[in-house]
Amino acid sequence: MTPVNQDEEWRCEKCSTLLGVLRADRVHVKHKRAQFVVRGHVMAVCPRCSDLCELDTAARPAPYTPPTAA
Image 1 (tube, rainbow, N blue to C red):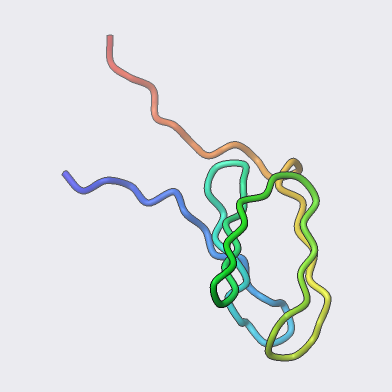
Image 2: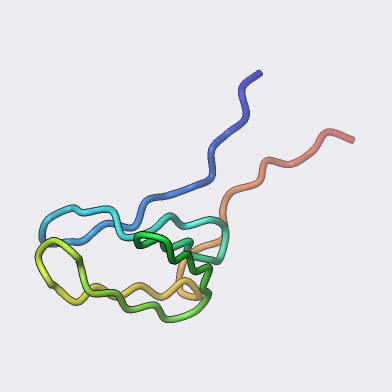
């Protein structure tokens, strides 16, 4: 059985550049040597097209967890 990958990509809506990876209620953002793990309202300027991208991790639905057999 292969594990289910719960990660989701956060991409620029204008040019589809990868801005970060959503894991549960947090976003992991990397740029060159800097790395940030943030929660809540996140804003980033796309390094390719300079568009202002926004994401609110609190407004996202919780990931699906299947019920366990008793």
